[in-house]
Amino acid sequence: MAPESVVLADRAALSPDAAPPLAVEGLSHAFGARRVLDEVSLTVGQGDFAVLLGPNGAGKTTLFALITRLYHSSKGAIRIFGYDIRRDPEAALRRMGVVFQQSTLDLDLTIEQNLFYHAALHGMRRSLAAARISEELARVGLDGRRRERVRQLSGGQRRRVELARALVHNPSLLLLDEPTVGLDMASRQFLLEHVRGLCLRQGLGVLWATHLIDEAGADARIVILHQGQVRAEGTHQEILARAQETSLKAAFDRLIADEFGKPGSQAP
Amino acid sequence: MTTLQYSLCLSGIVRREALRWLNQRGRFISALVRPLVWLAIFAAGFHFVLGVSIIPPYETYIPYEVYIAPGLLAMIQLFNGMQSSLSMVYDREMGSMKTLMISPFPRWFLLIAKLLAGVAVSVVQAYIFLAIAWFWDIEPPVSGYLAVLPALVLAGLMLGALGLVLSSFIRQLENFAGVMNFVIFPMFFTSSALYPLWRVAEASPAIYWLSEINPFTHATELIRFALYDRVNAVSAAIVAFYLIVFVVLAVWGYDPGRGLMARRAGAE
Image 1 (cartoon, chains in turn purple, cyan):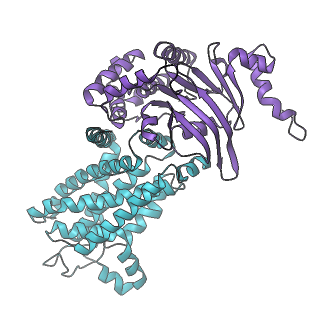
Image 2 (spheres, each protein chain N blue to C red):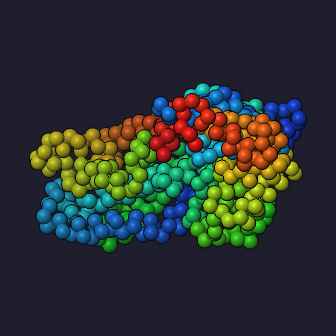
Image 3 (cartoon, chains in turn purple, green):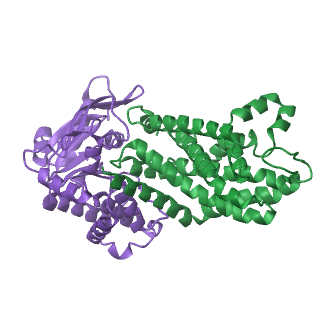
């Protein structure tokens, strides 16, 4: 199938009763004896801005590695628009855009060269790729700098390039692993607003991992991950109700602290 | 994915490798200077120490410079193979591996495309070296310049595949110094690159046998014979055999279900 028709087919598939952009079911993973994910289940629906909230070491990056098929889990299933990542990786990966925690840009190449490489990895024709690259770069305000080397860009600009790159092939699911780490307030704000806009306007499903609680706005779906387990999942209001707190910060602290209340465990 | 998309993907991967090579001025220059240092200094020093008797494919007595030139061609490819594969996994550059792995194309195809891209660059480098070596009186027959091309491609693929295997299996090779000490130097010195094996056999049968099973010996001999318009069928077969073994191991090592990628991540 040509990339043009892939895009159209994807948009057509986004009917309300279609499979959700991302469904994780009973996912467990261990490195040797160390259990990193324990029966994790979560869903990202069409147009959802889902914030995966968890402290460092909660298992967020492992979860991302499993969803992006860097390796397989020992147990459980991951489906992207109904396509199982193990059985139908091509269909699943084609619909997915990813921004990894650490930058994955080639510093010695220009912005444009980095994006063309990505487009080629998705089998896109050069003419189509050129049009999509211009479009996405314009949206992050970097179209005029496309021939500059990535090395010359600031951290915030590099992140914007990565976001543009993740969207070049028109994915319907966007995954971002701690995308705002190390960025200044303005860059953080820009990224957040841009990605939320994508959810609202294009119906993109987004999974945004972070340890910064204030990135989960009132409209976000929230998944709280701690020590490899989902402690809570729901809207902002549902999370507050569940923890019987009035602020998300307090609710988060309570939900991840439960463990410490058990006899024999360490006090916080 | 259609055949057209496969070829777009392959050409995108080759293009990126070429751009990286051209843009990293340091890598470009050191790749050329390294073999020239061996030729200009090492070979000049040993010119009077080592006499090389008449052995195939040579038909007369030859100066030492002429003897080591094919080994230096193979060395260019060895360095290149290690660099293009291992650079993907060095801490900060781990990213470029991820970029490649989340492409929807089958992983075996991505690895082979990556391999071909590395070979394309190493073949160009080899010819630049041959052009400069001409000034050191390394003047193979004109037809040899053409005949050496398939030998360079086969040897380059095999050495690149070895790099891929190492990058998937060995976590400890975190920097290039480790690769130099534990892979490049041992392979280079226990081969026919610097001295004919019959002389090694006189000195140490053990090292002689190590050299005989060393894939680098056969890469060197394949190139040496081709450069003088001869086919070394035994070396060609052995290089092809190692190529198949290394490709199978690399595809196996990068299979998401095998846990090697996971093991690497678990150790981070």
